[in-house]
Every structure is written in C-alpha cells, then in structure tokens.
Image 1: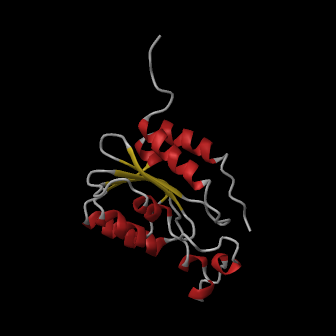
Image 2: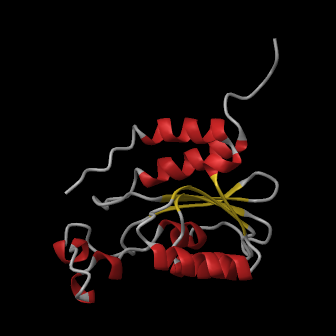
Image 3: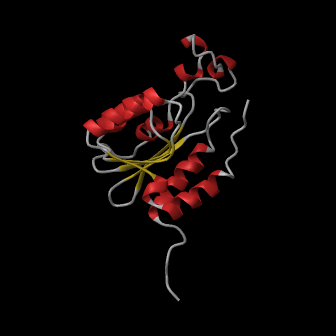
Length: 173
C-alpha cells in the first residue's frame, strides 16, 4: 500500500483554473486561471468577469458587436489571467507558473510578464486567433517565458482536466 496523491500538481492547478472558470457569467466562454508559486502554493485564482460594481444583469456589458467598443463585451470583461494577478496574495510573482484554461491574449501576456511569472501552462488555444496568438507568442518568447500546452507537458493531467472540463458547461448562444 503506497501513500500517493490521486492527482499530480499540473492536474491540481489546472483543475483549480477550471473550477474558477465555472464562476464566470460569460455565456460565450468561461475561462479560469490559477497561479502557483515555485514551491507549489496557490497564490492567485481568477476567472473572466465584469469589474466590481458593474451590474451583471446589464445587457450592455454582454453585447457582441465587436465593431462598436461600447457594445462589445470585450471592452468590459476582465480576463481570468488578469483577475488571478489582481487577486494575488503576494507580489512579485517571480518564478511562478500561471495555469490558464485558454492561451493568453496579448493584454494578459503583458500583465503576466510585468509581475514576473516565468511559466504559462494552458489547456486550449483558439487557433482562429492567429494574429493575437502570434503577438502573445512574440512577447512570451522575447521575455523568455516558458510556455507549454498541458497536453504536451503531461498527457494524463491533460486527459483528467478535459474530463473535468466536461462538467463545466458553457452554453452556446
């Protein structure tokens, strides 16, 4: 009989990011993030949502007209990565890893770099975001941030996280 954990560190931290994503009220895509220190402590968790004080029931915040910034949810939503950083219990985050349910956008990458995060582990990437992904990749490479897809880093952890994500339903509109 061995005393072994049921899940490894990657599964745990990405699992926390997935659970955080379930708190998002964004009906299009729920994202989560978990920041782990170099000594395997959770120091920040976040999900995509509106800033404090903004009414979740106001339909203007959830509009999808990207040609008009005043009527685009992208103008209002705080991304999971930024929320995780803002919710951190310690700063700087030098040497830490951020686990994200989605490959980070350039805006989030800027924050990731600025606070000293050294590693990004992501669950999925929107391939149709070629330009945004390229901008993020350039900054991450130039800042020497280690970036890995969970399925390339740890196949069993990736399978476990994909199974967990199947319980987190994202309604399609």
